Length: 537
Image 1: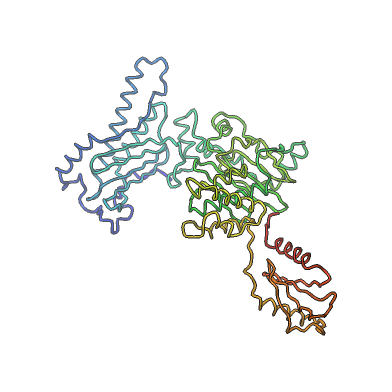
Image 2: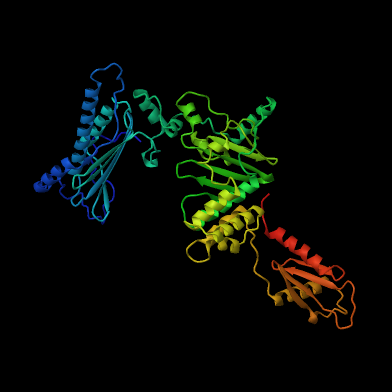
């Protein structure tokens, strides 16, 4: 992005189709403007204005007896420029405008201007500010550079046709929108002209991370080999987090709960990946890897250690010290690419390990509430109702318990949230399916189908059916399917008579009357649960 051409004055920029705002019509302050309207507007403008509530001091103020007077002069001049910018913008607006929003994003080498006018129906048209307006904005920034906060990065102005004005100087406390963010070199060039003692951590990382947190697979192998050679090992992390399978299950329950209530916040589950972005811009990811391994990494917004690195010149924390080679970019939180990763843990051999990462007590903003079963139950219950009942808490506890064992059914989930349209139980259950903690049971097989399948199996196997008439096959229901057999006739004694077990998923096993049915049924059901229970490693 570069500074707009000073000769550009494309007042038709943007789309006004069907908006009711016609930039081709005479403007409010043009040759044919309604002078009475402008007098009323200017009178109201003088009465309604809100300036930034910022305590300014001069950059160099030590020992200056006239500092208060000078600050007042600069502040007043800045206010005058803001009002002049507002008036010039108002004069360029189309007929019928009710409100304008303007954003100017400036550095010493690049500029972006976005000016939108809205009518009473909220329809908008975008205009290109005039050369004169852009020059006033540049003057405003140059003036602000004389104050202690330094020059602003974004100048945001809102104005109504009643003359109510609000002005905000944005110094980067929050990340800039993507369409108002310059490449890093643009900010570095500005900092050469206007040095600052410190920057917001996100911006300091953006312009200065230099890829120091990136860990490509090749580099991960080399670093892991070097660590082993130097005797560097990951720190055994005892008590920081629950064991990985339990933590994964709780993460999945919370994801399901937030999805059920339709919240855009809260954790989410994708295949082999847990995601969490908090409302305060902290967040984390947790990857489940083959072999029962896992990686938890993320960042705490404005982490002190990152501030010390980017603004204090301290070394970057060695987050991957002692990490195995499989802790690499593909399984790291995206913050690593922006230099905003502040912790990295990995699960291996039944333990959590970390490098120079913060301990868990400092990471609560970046990780969902998975610390204890009670924590998860409290979160889920609070999502169900503002004042949850004992019955609702018990249902939430049953859900967490089932997830930790990997046997959640849709009925268990529906018992927490109900099964009407108030909550999205189906989408919530899908989160549990992807996490591998759901028992996805097939529909019960009809009795006739069970008998037919067993009969066909006997014929396909060429089994001797003498004394075992297939037309007399009967089926008795068990919890996961059917027990199919030909019953003995009155007075008939048969040892080792064939008995077949067929599950609702179609799996068929053969046994005999010499094995107690209770034993066979219990083992058959256990194998069924193994097939349809937890898929976690």
